Amino acid sequence: MAPVPESAARVFGDGLEGAERFAALLERHGVERGLIGPREVDRLWDRHLLNSAVIGERIPHGARVVDVGSGAGLPGIPLAIARPDLHLMLVEPMARRVDWLDEVIEELDLDVSVLRGRAEEKAIRAEIGTVDVVTARAVAPLAKLAGWCLPLLREGGMMLALKGASARDEVARDMSAVARVGGGEPTVSECGVDLLETPTTVVIVERIRPQASAQQRRRRSAVGVRSKRTG
Ligand SMILES: C[S@@+](CC[C@H](N)C(=O)[O-])C[C@H]1O[C@@H](n2cnc3c(N)ncnc32)[C@H](O)[C@@H]1O
Image 1 (cartoon, helix red, strand yellow):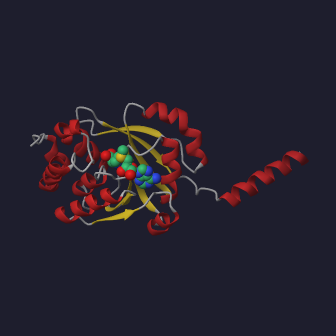
Image 2: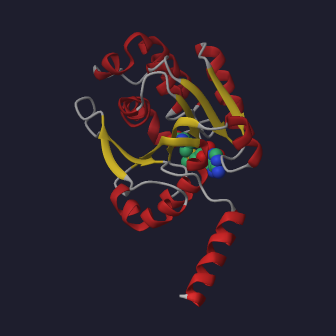
Image 3: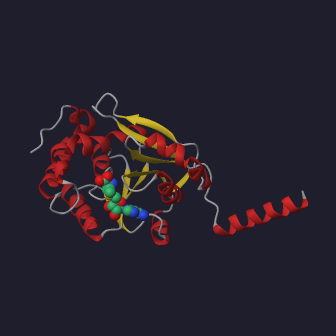
């Protein structure tokens, strides 16, 4: 079993035992069920559990949170363990991963729901409505992720995209695409600075206005064409 780092008690508090049980489940079944690579087993705590849970620093008390593309349950499960005040929903399209998430939630007795589907699907959007925070780790490039996640947020809500070293390059490349789907200027923030050897890099995007419907976009561009003609 991978040793539990000292910082785990500070991050998970009363949830430490639950975090240890989640680590043990991932260690026992994660590779055989195709959830994590074999090299990840020795670095479950730093690279996965703690790296996920520290983003709680950016999430207000009692927030409604959707984790898009949860896969093995990251960052959603560690977040639920460290922050029982949050209302969490995990969205995942792959049946065998949904089964895994359901099993973990039952085993750890967590108050978390799982939706099977893709974040951009109409039925999933209808089921979720809008929430305060959407998280995603290793799911898609920033532009695509913003198109999927921002419609799930209320105005003023935040998308937290866990990114690695590519964060600043992705922001520079994709910021106009993010603005087109209703996002504010992305900022890059480090979480767990005093806790982790490698803090978690998070790209934060606020939803500043609703995404225009296809009809509204067509109408706007028609008005643009007309005013160019008359201008
Ligand atoms: C590389 S895995 C990352 C899983 C987990 N977030 C992690 O960090 O270990 C990407 C996950 O995103 C899911 N996914 C891909 N496209 C998605 C979409 N449009 N909506 C929701 N989930 C999606 C995949 O099924 C997969 O489980």
